[in-house]
Image (cartoon, rainbow, N blue to C red; front, top):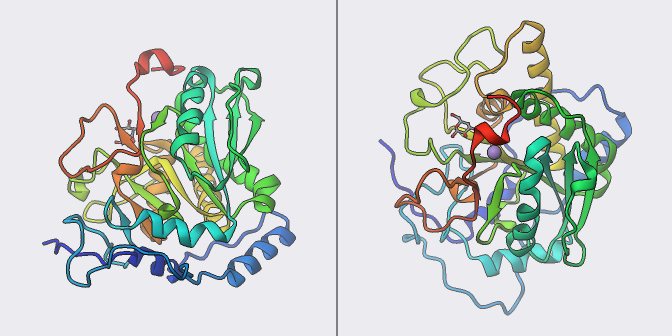
Length: 339
Ligand code: GAL
Ligand code: MN
């Protein structure tokens, strides 16, 4: 039985103080210096929730929340839905922190066609008034559209090879995100969010999503039982999750958090993908299966509701008050390299 938990406004902000246990993944392959610096930064970071003195906002109720949805996980990480937070208050707290948020998108092969709308709509809704670094991975750098960016926002283009199978393009993202953190992002950003490019923003996608390790509930699985989740079910795979186990089915099209925590995640998933490859195994949903394994064993400190990456193929369901970002309708036969 799931007890509906009423939320307290702004609870999520306090939860940024939570340090969930992290599995024992020792960084090895990267330079010690930058990792040590990032670790120091993460220890020193002040997560004080400083609210501006005269900011007026609706009084939070200790007994009545604005929502009937589940707003906290059993390990006490907030689940972010519309009306569980006050956007003005969140912005007033986070904007003075002078944060830089990196975001990665992969526009490889025919997926380059989605990049223009992704960027244009992101400029309207994604982390507005924050410093954003878009890291675009593509095999066609000359096709990256010119988009007007607000002050403090930048585009970095990284050339990558075009692989023949969409499954390989998808799975290779973990390694490429690892590399870009090692080479650049660790010096420049506080947070990093990794998103699919075949999507469009419609509504605020803001600082309420910031946290240490952030996963997002898949729009097709939020109302199904864990045994229906499309986890990897073969014990030979490092992504194996047995039946009777699992919290949520997380979408591979959106994950994020602090640079340190996302680095641990992508590094471990990349290692596991390679270990599987050596045995001739490809997980059911490539890096999404490995992400699900990782987030089962390393609980996210914040979970995003399906509002943060919906799927236009699924009509808006009753629980959804808003759709912030959504994968657009497409003909997979046409846009994928192979079927
Ligand atoms: C689909 C989605 C895939 C994968 C799959 C998992 O809806 O398009 O990318 O997430 O669900 O079952
Ligand atoms: Mn997609």
